[in-house]
Image 1 (cartoon, rainbow, N blue to C red):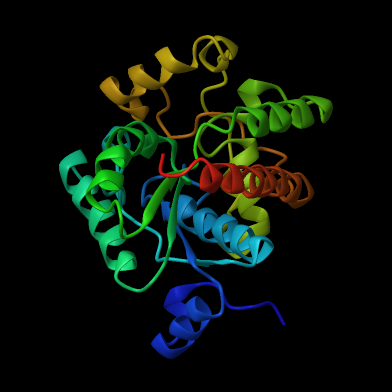
Image 2 (cartoon, helix red, strand yellow):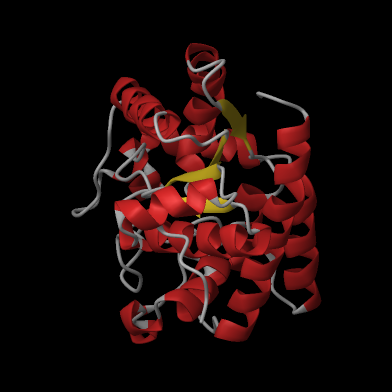
Length: 263
C-alpha cells in the first residue's frame, strides 16, 4: 500500500504524526481550472499537479502535499467557457495564505511548484516577498524552470518521432498522453484534433514571444478549439515516461533548493 501524502485525504492526527515523524516539508502546487480543448477536462493541470506532487513526495519520503491551488492565473484562457482565473493580486494573497497556514503546523520547508505555465512568472516574482515575510518560521523554496528535464522530454519525444509542434504546449500530444495515465476516463480521444501546429510558434527561441502574445491576445486568437499542439495518437506509455522525467527532475532539484536555503 502506498503511503498517504495528500493532506486533504488525511486526518489532522495523521498529519501531526507525519510531521513529528519527519515529514517536515510541504509541497504546494499551483494548478489551474481552464479549458484544455474538446478532449481534455478543465481540471487537467490540477489533476496532473496532484499526480506529480504525490509521486515527488512518495519518492522523497520527507514531504506531504498541500491542497493544489486552483484556480490561478488563466486570463489567457478566458475566451473559453469553464475557465476560471484569479487576478495576480488575489493569487499572491492565496499563495501567501497557503504558506502562512503551513507555517503554523511545524513544517520546516515549503516547496513551491506549478503544473500550469501561466502561473510561473507571477509565482517567481512574488516568492521572495513571501519568503521574507515568513523568514524565521519556515523556509520557502521555488522549484521551477527545470531546463534539464525539459530538454530530456524534448529529446525523448523527438526520438519517438514527435515534433515540437505536435508535442505542443497546451492540450497537445504530451499533455494528453499524461492525462491518459492520470485520468484516462476523462480523456475523449474521439474528440482530439490538431490545433495550432506552426513549428515557428514552438521554436525554443520564439517561445517567450509566443507566450507573451498568448497572454496579450488570448489562446483563442491562435487556436479556435484551445489546443496548442496535436493530441492525435497520444498514448499512456509516452505519458508515463514524461511524468517520470518531470518527477525525477523535481526530486533532484528539491535537495539542492533546500541546501541553498530560502530562494
